[in-house]
Image (cartoon, rainbow, N blue to C red; front, top):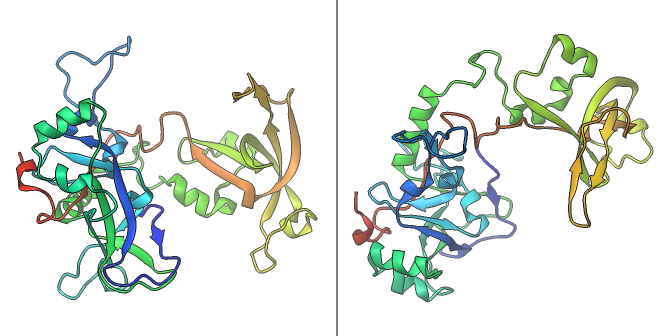
Length: 318
């Protein structure tokens, strides 16, 4: 379940700053990220307990003994987790994490001042629209070009992930047949279905199919497989050493302009649409309405852990 990740584009030396991570949000009480069941008017049900937390929490840094979380404005929160070695059974090529999170030292002089403040003092400044905390990702050892960068999210994160794996069940309730959209996109050839096939063999999860044409993913329908492969299409610039993917005849939904700055799709197949051959390289699955990770009940939510000796003592209020 690793996410996008980060990779070194050049040699990074030990103790070198890999990425700055200035705070976009300093949330002194992470309960503000709680989500509640809403009534028909869109208001929280009186007396209702939280039903989950906002997806944002997964991309914020915090400490298990603190109500405070820091949500950064850089891509540093996309760096994947790697735990330290345990009894010789380490992760990430058996080497453990190659980077660590620490508070910014040079590029943000406000950080050192804010680290001495109480949560109440920070709250007052935040209410005035101020920000003043920054983190940075630092190399623990030399990192070669193209090597993936890992940080340790901490033992609390790992325990939360283990509990999630044990408790989670697919939204369909059928664990044996469940396939994630990520897995479907890794093997479009296997999972793509035509309109006729869907009548008797629907997709294993709620998905929307899109076709990448002229720089955009357009809603589309897969009509039928053609006898050619993508190598037979003159305008396809696929590398010669790539596998020859299947080509389907697809029906694309047209964009409809609402104004100079807005566009929307009108689901009126087939009167305002057009058909074209397209290889599976340009076909992609997307989550259906309210079926992405952001909406699924029981979806994993846990802050990225900051080392205990890095988190200020006065912020440990739990």
